[in-house]
Image (cartoon, rainbow, N blue to C red; front, side, top):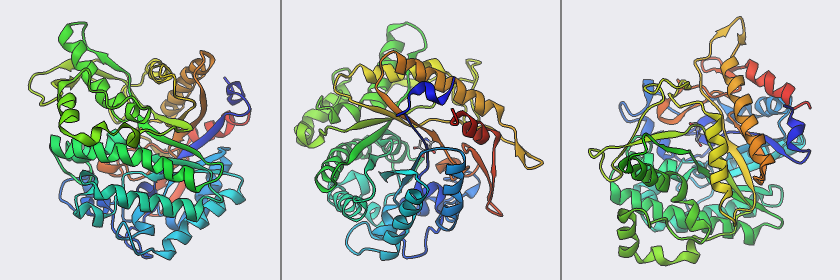
Length: 444
Ligand code: NOJ
């Protein structure tokens, strides 16, 4: 398999996110984000890690972009930290923050790297979170202001935009389960966050469309093939509920299909009791591409003790399946299947795999990281992607997650997904063998 098998117009990129790499969390005029404050809370993040310095990308972006180039990627995906340019989330602008992203964009363009800019990759300004964050309607006005500012400021040189990163990720982990920032729990918080997120997703797209000539606009979704543990009706229905949450909840409103309530009375009740959910058009937008982010499949078993979903994940380890250091099952066939599940929506025009990758327990020996497992992972997932493409999936690109070991949210710095190793004491970068593998793969 060669990269050229995917076609000469296929776009190859590497993805990152502001809070995970930038550092300079509380300097150069940046306001705090919910991840800065969440990190201060005892026992919320492994080993008490914080995003305060992260990979110091803020100061080292020239070096890091040179690595992107050296590994032969053509696209650099990064996100704008909302609170770096609007420290309080709205109103007063931080000029130094605006300039930083101009500098990063210009550095990309000078290297002939195409920037794909994510507007929201989970780092909500703390000031907005204090007002209720994604649980209140005021968030939509603030978000629209942020989107418009970015579009007007950068739209003449950035044409590729991603409105949200994995809405199910931050609404479920941050507003229902409390394991991500801002650490809220409960069904009410979750459903309100879902509602405002679904609106933000479409309105963000509409603003970009109106402000930017020739924009290529997408948004991303986490997705997983959901497999019932047995063919018992209870397991099958439990798997369907999880599928409804994980794969359909944010996609279907965008496509004008409304929320996927049909299989699940809890969502049905919410839809009926909340009139704004009936405002289909507000949540609909004709995206130029849909970003899919896949890492693993999920095997689901009915469990009466789990509130609301009555479903439980049967972990890869207990099923004796190969898995990454995150415990995520390595299963490239399921990648193929979930792509095809999205392809079955006739109105999805183009797909980009905006994230895919794996964490392993890398060991740095004599300045080398021999991460053959990660290479094997990429090879298998790329082969599945090629098969999907040959079978008609309109997949236009693939972005590896991620350039460099970084701040992996609640996992802190323990989980290593990078193609490049980082020594967090010295900030020395060392290209892993998987990085070199990409460099060679992208040669032909
Ligand atoms: C999803 C998120 O978008 C990204 O921020 C995260 O680091 C990776 N997946 C790996 O968990």
